[in-house]
Length: 240
Image (cartoon, helix red, strand yellow):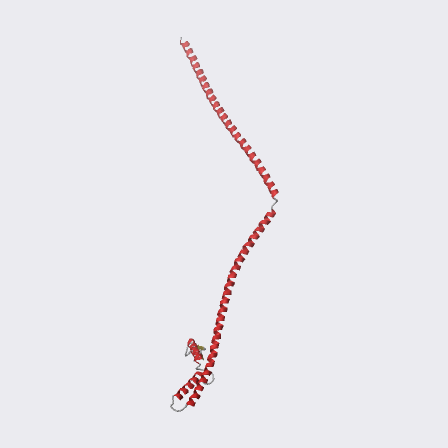
């Protein structure tokens, strides 16, 4: 693999170039761990087992009388197989333990999630209870304020007495109002009668004035006629 290198002079960094990507590296590492084809010290176990098996097969295929060599090589192969199997068993035990741990972890996660859900439900219930408590407290405060206002008011007997006095005063005012209304109605009738009488008197005066004027006019005419008659008699006598 090529790591990132810094270019001198401009201070720029060139991106790292890898032969394999991260996912491919994980696959390769997993494959090497499973097949045990690599090791940090000495020859890989799988290669050693392969060599033992190859030597044993090659020895068996020989036509020579090599029973002892075959037996020796078979024992060496079985021993190497046992040696190779021990880490596998350890790995299997680790895998089983990890699976159990994973199951326990999943159960613990389910339990924690259940507790979280229960806690959220409890929180919602507590919120509702808190809102109900606030409303109840508000109602109590309103009731207390009303109680204080009521306590500031005079006793019921005194209030009742005041109401009775007011009712009496109202009744007296209503009676006075009724009497005033009746008196006003009477005065209206009297005033209407007075107007009628005045109107009749005025009509009578106007009629009397007309009659007087007519009488004066007639008297004036009679006087004028008399004077004319007297003047005519005088002239007749003069002619005679």
